[in-house]
Amino acid sequence: MSMKFDIAFSASAVIDGGLAIQLKLSGDAVAAGVAEVDPQAVAVRAAGIAKFKGKALSTLDILAPAGSKADRLIVLGLGKADKLTAYDWLKAGGVAAAAVKTMEKVTVFLDAPGADVGAAEAADFATGMLLRAYKFDTYKTKKKDDDEDKSPKTVTVTIVTAKADAATEQFVSAKAIAEGVILARDLVNLPPNVLGPIEFAQKAKDLESLGVDVEILTETEMTELGMGALLGVAQGSSRPPRLAIMTWNGGTPGDQPVAFVGKGVVFDTGGISIKPSLGMEDMKGDMGGAAAVTGLMHTLAARKAKANVIGIIGLVENMPDGNAQRPGDIVTSMSGQTIEIVNTDAEGRLVLGDALWYCKERFKPRFMIDLATLTGAIVVALGNLHAGLFSNDDALADELTQAGETSGEKLWRMPLSKDYDKMIDSRFADMKNSGGRQAGSITAAQFLKRFVGDTPWAHLDIAATALNSPQNEINQSWASGYGVRLLDELVRKNYEN
Image 1 (cartoon, rainbow, N blue to C red):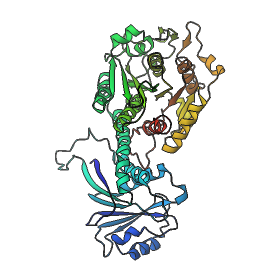
Image 2: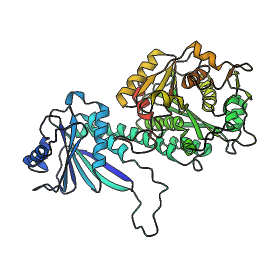
Image 3: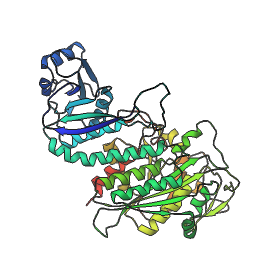
């Protein structure tokens, strides 16, 4: 059963059953709010017996505490006060959400002694609850003898804090971030027979309800533009490609926009260079970059970000039918540069190459950042704790790295150089679409760099972080929604008016 949280903030609360959650810092007393739930001595005594020290994200669960109007009392550890970050508050909210279980009423006393709990911290805590509650069970059906109600369970949550009014206002923006992450997760989790290029384009079109201007380019229009690289990937599929252009004009009119470009390969068989069958079902998630860009545009519009932002997603399916492109084919990109296809499974960079060039030429953005589940090589290099960052601009790379530290969606910068660039030179065309196994993530980034010109640019290889990533305090889903919180933080901190 999915769980939905109906969250409100209050300066005070009256307990009448349900679950009460208290916060505790390492070495400090249980929050004073416990007096409203149960005699303080009960919680203090229970903590002593259990040797509960308030270690970060640890919990002490007291069932039916004596003399209490609450059915359960949970004391949630925060760790050291001087080390608490925004991401820590997000994770604490996730742990609280996991503790709810069968309770339908929850009261959280957020003002822990020694902790600096402001409106932002309260909103982050609530956002963590929303993110942890996500579960993709759309296609789970009841057994005939199962009377379980499959509709989402709604849990009423009251977060008690002295900053209730400010937290309520702050949560409007924070909730928009959660919505964007959840949209990105949904898109990645959807089965490929349901989410093709046309259906994905409609998901982007739906953002018009939030005030986003959305334009969809068809195969005919992309042919007229000369997008031979993107179209070459799509030609083996019966499902036609699309290019979705999302525009959010929240900043000063006429100001140069910032731009985000996403790889949207809705399913990747590898084409003629077909992938091994084991694990191929995961290739429904090869559009994680496009999902992140779509989720980000939802977030920016929903929170009325004061910035001018372009989001572009190239949507294709890579299939091996009789019309599919072959290793040895040469295609001409929108930039006029020719590309020898040496591996049809190196397809995402072809989609991004045309999308980046189109973005650069049409919008002349302040910078471009592309996101793509691009290479297995980045998984080998970094595992699934960091995404790979490649950039031609040190200032942009530094801003992204800092946004990653703040959001918890971390990046690790990888090299670019002329020596790596030589590895994709072709005997027959301007370049080839793969440099082979060695430095695979780097040569893929070098390929993309040939389509950005002098525009400040960053490439994020999110192959290990967008899907099949480790479950944690704020995500229990196969799809993480990686990139939405990272890029929202980047825009919020550096590029809003």
